[in-house]
Amino acid sequence: MKTVFKREKVIQLQEIANNAWPAKNYLFLNGWILRFTDGATSRANSVLLLYYYGNNLKGDISFVEKAYRKYDLPVKFMLHDYYEPSELYSRLVELDYQADPIVDIMGTNLESLKKEVIINHYQYVSSSKRKKAWSEALAKLATNRSKEDLIGIIGIIDRINIPLKRYFAAVTEDHVIGIVLGILHNSYLGIMDLIVDPEYRRQGVATALLCQSVEWTTTLGGTHIYLQVEKENHEAIALYNKLQFENWYSYFYMTKK
Image (tube, rainbow, N blue to C red; front, side):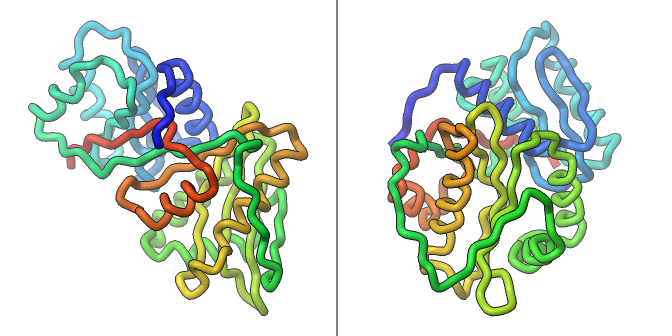
């Protein structure tokens, strides 16, 4: 199910998500925000399209391309449901940009979140500071990330200026089997890097980690929770639908290598 959000709400959520995953360097161009972080994650290395008040689209695209090439990065535009200007997509297609897979931003009101029983044969721990065990688990579990990307991701996490953030982990015996980072800003809880060891998936670990983060959030006055998931990740979407998450809006990247 998709909830139809007005443009103002989508822009607000884009700003909240941007603050929750800060880039290393920024450049502002006629309402666009260019983000650069040594290539670590697309979100921190792409153009965030909040508004557009320029009058030379061709020239602005050329400026963006030169800026990313200076950093030796692929050029990426992040197009959400209300990107501006409306002709940007067709112009990028003409310039041989390719569309990446669609990503859904899913969320729900915490009062509507279906209550789930946390499985108690694992231990769940949390901390307001990033601990060595959590970082080591990120490196081990995020098998699709290169060593360089993981270094960049840790840098992003350490740059988060939002004071209300918490690291959660599921532990069995002597090792971590699942992690998540929760960031609370403007009453919205952002879920970052929810990862579970493949050997322990489909056992309720991801659900339990979400419940842990929600419990923490409600004590601080949080009202909503959101996360991002690729539209083709049907297993994850099925879990979130079960927990009463809805599709709030979508985005995709247009990339020029």
